[in-house]
Length: 372
Image (cartoon, rainbow, N blue to C red; front, side, top):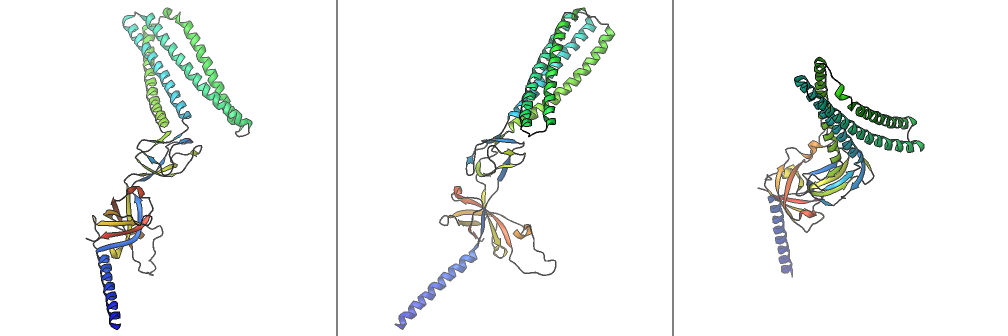
């Protein structure tokens, strides 16, 4: 009986020795740590470049998106009106430029040949008439916009939400637009009455030279206004385009920060988007375990959420500084008091094998890095 017990004890010691040997050898061949977290190379917060009321939200947390897909839209009406207003103003200025060119051409021909003055002048008046008609249409659009703003402020004033001064300012602006429209209509009537008298007007050559010089200066001024307005129109069209928020790359929505009806400010985060295939594992490896760990070393990862699944990867980068170097409150050893603490070095591991769809940023686990 004693002999059997001795044999069993020997076998147990042998098994324990073998397991201990394997455990020590495994620890020598692999750098092991449980301070592992899933990160992403590209997780960005998406925001509108302009503010407004959030009209539509098409994606929520966990939804997949494709590059260029519409995510959300803010109220575009004000920006659309701004585009239309700038277009009408630009058309009006272009018509004015055409009218000035017609006048200049007419006077130049008159100075050279003294013929065809009547036809050129009539062409000028027709161009001016077109310009006035376009200005009237522009004024009608502006008056309609001013009336809507006045009516809105009137309702708010009646409810005591805005001061009287603001309502009166909006009313004054509306009345001004109406007066401008009447003035343009009167100018149009006067222009038509002048068309019958244009052929009778004859000016001296000197007067025509002075007028020609003046018109060319006006033309340069109008062309400068056109260039400036074209820039404004491009910006207005860009702002209208910016009322839509689209995905800059394909990925998964990690977080949604606002809901339809919310007022958003420029730069205010609306979505947090994680790009596909951007996941990696960050291992905080003790400095005493860095021996043999190099870029390209094989790594084997098990996540706490999926302990039965094995992920493989390679060491892509070893940080040149410890994690404590970038702590918000670094250790103060200036007083001479010092307690030695093992530092941890961040090691970036690119995951090469495993079900990437299971990965979530912030997950923890255990990693074994094969020492070279």
